[in-house]
Amino acid sequence: MEIPVLPKNIFSAVRNEKPVLTTPILSSAIARVNDYNILDGLSLLANLHDGVITAAFFDPQYRGVMDKMKYGNEGESRQKARIALSQMSNEMIRQFIIEIDRVLIKSGHLFLWIDKFHLCEGTNSWFKETSLAVVDLITWDKGKMGMGYRTRRKSEYLLVLQKAPNRAKGVWLRHDIPDVWTEKIVDKRHPHQKPALLQRSLIDSVSAENDFILDPCSGSYSVFEACRLTGRNFIGCDLRPVEAP
Figure 1 (cartoon, one colour):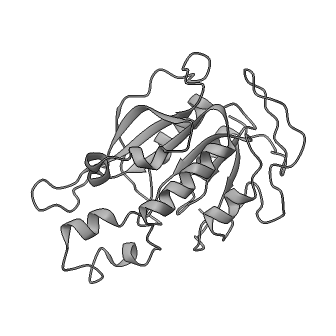
Figure 2 (figure 1 turned 90 degrees about the horizontal axis):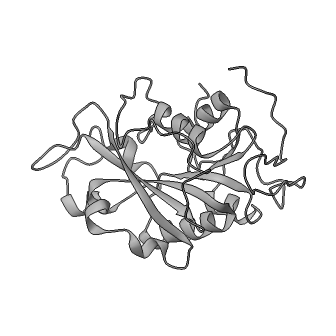
């Protein structure tokens, strides 16, 4: 598919009841659309107007599972890159989700990455004061073994949330996405890099060309890559620079 030239800072909605906006989605020039922004995610969210994002991806830097398991080799080998990242408390995660709810369009989607620890502990407290509801769950089979005292972690989980009104018809357009997705990361550029093909499929399912997709903790910018391949506008940032693919 030929990727169209995308406008900067202009939201051009074309699907269903979404309003057509001709004003910038940002209240200031704090970040650029379709670019790599070195910025705090909450600052980016604070400068986004209400109801201008069709779908958002959020991959928090969880601390809970590491504290729970009390690994002694942290910082010595494979966890070195992980602990170099800024850790997020539950309250900070909740602040992100409240802001994401605000900037999503009606019936827009949030794709929230969680690990097994938070899946078992529960995440409902994060969604208080929002209109978001969990509508599905996708298991990502990473194709390799991870840590674990008993079973070894091989999967991560993607919670699918939708802003009210909750509906699938006319909003979720693809019906060939399985709830267990196998994809191995080949060109790893970030400790928490996520599956690009899955994210591309989800973007294709819940949005139209030129819609805005948000990732306030972009990491490897795999969501940006998926947006470029599907002709969507990307707005996102990360605290650390990343080498462009």
